[in-house]
Length: 545
Image (tube, rainbow, N blue to C red; front, side, top):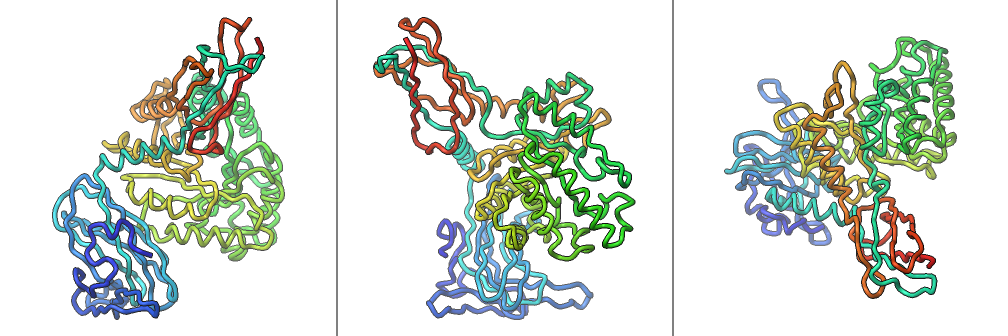
């Protein structure tokens, strides 16, 4: 494909002028090849993959280009890559003006076909920089259609807000008519938002059961929840054959009382260190029996009561069950969960997919490959699957986050940010706002859950409140965003045609119409959802005189 943004600030991005603008490192040979269709691309031969004289491994390198970077600028990166043999992880690397080496994206490149790498990074200083691609495998790297497009912070933020408004709001035309079906001119309309349409939630802990102040704080803000630990295997069966779902049951009942929807977290966790002491030494048959019991009991207990299940948590990074049961273990577990609970969406929940471009386990292309492996398992074709992105950030790479969301959107599955937090640092509030705004604005993100569970003895990473449930700065930010996302006109007057145009966030509404011709108020309940077109939709309120 043609390079995005016509290559941006990259010279000769399609290599139609040979290697003009590009260079190679010492002892590396490069040339430009032409495909049978006439497409030109760079090929870097014998680029590395060996040991240096000091015994360090030398990565394979591509051509590189020097460029000028600007401070306070986001850079969107893309390129098409191929390798000479097999499959290899190829990284896009930017050497910044201050000498920092930033991984801006990674893709599992293959021989015989082109793979698109999308990524990005943020420039915090101005001056000469360099971009190149490298792989730890001993392969020749083919490069084509490279693009690096700068956006000022103002440009990026403005686009994020426009996208958020387009994605999460609709223009609704309300028409009030009397019993005679004639328009009711100059009627007063009150608009009450009952429930925000965009799912926004937080992690809930068992402390909420005994603290009314915690309950009030949580339920007045969030429409969705994930139980931090209370549904996990080690919480419900710490000792073998001694199952107890009482705490999770009571938490679910509390959530249901307030209309809060709950994600199931989780059926299994693939991390070796998260297994109970009695599970680790089990033989194959014993492990299978214990897993079958766990799966059947927990999923049956909550089938139809949860909107999601995190089925085999973090199985890009961990493989406890695959090591014991074979490479198709995860796919089989999804199959069985889907047979018992046919309503919940089954999520593949993983960390570092959005957070760390350099994590080889969480490359977006590897996430997609794992998802496709699970979906292609016999009997899994009809499963309702979902993309779960944990989103545990330190310093977020916002351009990379957006590009990864774009890449994963090609799966055409529900996509949620499932465990959002930002490590404590002087920019924690700013960074959290960037992450939440980016997720909210992306048209393919269907919901966000914070990982900010309150604990009396201190939070895991990020606290929204103190122990008196008074907001900390990150809590104030969350409240600010919720209020902003709920902002709408609360009163209006119909025109001569009985109509009024309203710009409304997606959600559930109560509309109250008052008019001298009415003996009382006319009330109608309306859901404004994303199924309506992004252009104007119309709802007619018919009232009796």
